[in-house]
Length: 143
Image (cartoon, rainbow, N blue to C red; front, top):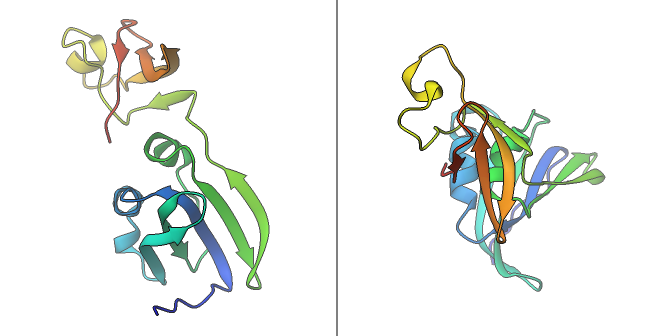
């Protein structure tokens, strides 16, 4: 059996859908850090069957927008002295800036380099899409 030590001071990103852990690991640039980070994949879960977990032995600022776009069902546990002192639920972000492009090729955010694309959450028929602040085009995202 694989044994991973508990962390003393840091963050655990839990309840990651099986297979999305690597994407989160990469988008948060956790492969570039100089402190211990563990990506656990295909961990047995009574609630999800299998899940991924990321353990970070350091308290860092997590980009909640990126995390919310990739895995809105994740939870973040803040650890102090090997104990969870705070839990946070990740949510789909209401606003996204500069993480993806508008699908409208004529949108000013695609033609002018100084414009940072801004999108507001727009839910329609159970799907999650974003509406461009500049041209009002509905855009689905992919990170």
